[in-house]
Image (tube, rainbow, N blue to C red; front, side, top):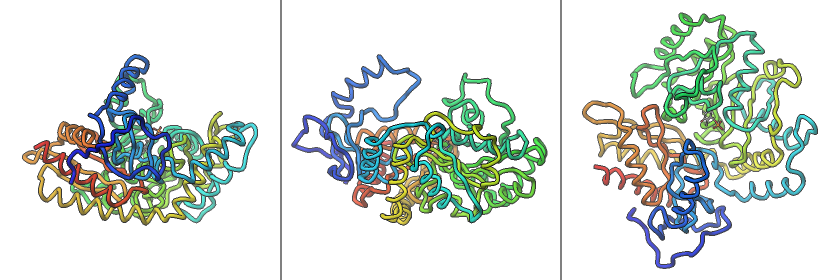
Length: 458
Ligand SMILES: *Cc1c(COP(=O)(O)O)cnc(C)c1O
C-alpha cells in the first residue's frame, strides 16, 4: 500500500497553480530530494542564515487539498500543514479569491492611521466565535508570539501585577518575552538570554508520564504557584489547552478548569494560548471547549488566515479596554490582505462544516494509530484531538523518550512522500496535523507510509 509510488510520466516542471484541483495523489517522480530541490538547497546554504533550518529536504511549488508538490514534481501527502496553519487547505479557493480582491483594492494603510472594515469584521467574528457570553473585544497583530506578548501586556496592565505563570513543555514563541515563557532550551533559547523577568514555570498535567488526575495535577501546580510567587502577585496564567511544540500533551480532565477557578478566586487573568489548537483544529472551534473552560483571553494565530500573517488577542472587554489608547498596535497588525484571508477561512470552516471534519479525521487517525500501538511497544502513547494527533515514542524496556527513533521515522516518511513533523521536549513525539481538506484516501495512504516507516526502522 505504501511502497514508493512511481509514475512513467515525469513532469518536467511543477504546477504553477495549487489548491484542491491538484491531483490528490502521493507520487514520487525523482529521488528525494530531486535535482531542482538540491540546486535550491545549495542556494539556501549560500544565502540563508544557517540558524534557519528546514525539516523537509524539498522545496515547495504548489499545494492544496491534502498534497504538496515540490519543484521536481513530486507530490507529498501533507501531514504538517505548515505547522497547523493551512487548516482549510493550502491555496483554498475562497482564500485565494479574497486575497486577490483585497490586494487589488489596497494592500496596506496601517489600521492605526486609516482604519478599514476587514479588521473590524475579523474582530466581530473572533469575539463571536471564542467561548464566553460576556462582552468581548479583539486586537490584531502578525505572529503568534506577538499575540502572546500583547495578551501579557493586557493582563499586566489590567491587574497591575507582574508575575506570569507558564508551564513545563510550553511553547509560546521566539521573541524575548516569549522565549522566557517557552520551556525548551535547545534550540529556542540556547545562548539568547538574558530573558524577560517575572516568568514562573509550574508543573503541567501530563497523564502519560505523571499518572495524576486533573485535580491532583492542578493542586501540585497551585501549591507551587502560591509558595513560590504568591497568589496576589500573579497577573496571568498562560497555558496551551493542548500543547503544540511541547508534545501534543492533553492535560487530564479537570486540570484546566481547576486552574481557571484558581485564577478567578485570586484576580489573575487566565490566558488560553490557542495558537496551535484553535480554529477548528481539534474538532471544536477552540480546544478549551472540550473542557467547558471559558478563558479570560485567548491568543489565536496559525490556522486563522490560511498562512497569511495574522494573529489576535480576543477576550473580556473589561480587560481589553484597560490599556491606554495607542498602547496596543503595530504597523502591520491586522493587515487588510491577511484579514480578508481570515474572513474567507472562517466562512469556509462554517460552510464546509470543518469542525465536524476534524472529528472524523480524529476517528480515522486514532483507529490506525491505536492498532500501530498494539503491535509496536515503541509507541508509548497515542493522544490528541481532532486533526491534532500524536504518537509518543519510547524505549520499551525503560520508558525513556526515544527522540532518535522519531527522527528516523520522520526521515523515512519524507523519503516515501509524506510530510511528517516531530515535536516534544525530547523530540520523541510524531505529530499529525493534516489539513481538514484532505481526503480519506490520502489519510489512509499516509498512515500506511507511517506504519511502514515503523517497520523499516526496526
Ligand atoms: C506557534 C506557536 C506560537 C508562536 O507563534 P509564531 O507565529 O511562530 O510566533 C505560540 N504559541 C503556540 C501554542 C504556538 O503553537
